[in-house]
Image (cartoon, rainbow, N blue to C red; front, side, top):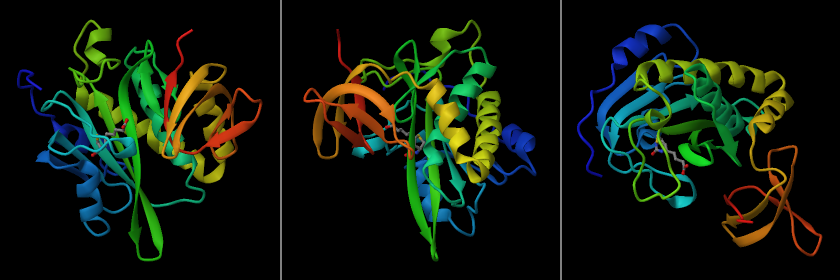
Length: 258
Ligand code: BTN
């Protein structure tokens, strides 16, 4: 990608605002890293305990869902990973993460929705993605919530992607946005531990997928049908042409064109 060089993130300001909070202390910044998820896994548990946030201005091997890559020009977006000590159950965490991004965008005046499971869309175009990975720590599994937000530019190889600055008058302040995401994630992560169904309800209210004809690329092949419902654990229930229903745990949804 051939974007102009952007101002580096004022990570010290983010660290100052998040000092003493449950998510973002410590805040670990790198100008360049292979992947913030990979670094989080390498630094956990001692240097990256639960609540640590690893943020980078440039990833050389950013990871996407389903084995894809996440490409962003240096300092053109927000790429970070939140280390979450596992709270039972784990299933609300991806929902909490998507919800946090949508709510943080609302705080800066950008209306966004979610495409199952947690792609963040503006006007139907993807502006942010979330990759949840696990890291074994002793007998426990920690969750690494990797979040990538297109702020100044999107990956030009993705035809249906957009970026935040295209939707606002003033350039988005990345530091402020990161603080908002961490605040909202802290809220929903706390709710997830006590009332996980509330997270699902709030996430589902932001979901733009139900009731639509979709194609879903799953690890086991492609299916097509009506996005009919959400299961208790967040799986997408697709009603196929023969009337049967299939629950999809992981996959990539494309809306079928009418
Ligand atoms: C997706 O495919 O939509 C998920 C993209 C997730 C990208 C973020 S950027 C920060 C974190 N580190 C990574 O290597 N990937 C995630």
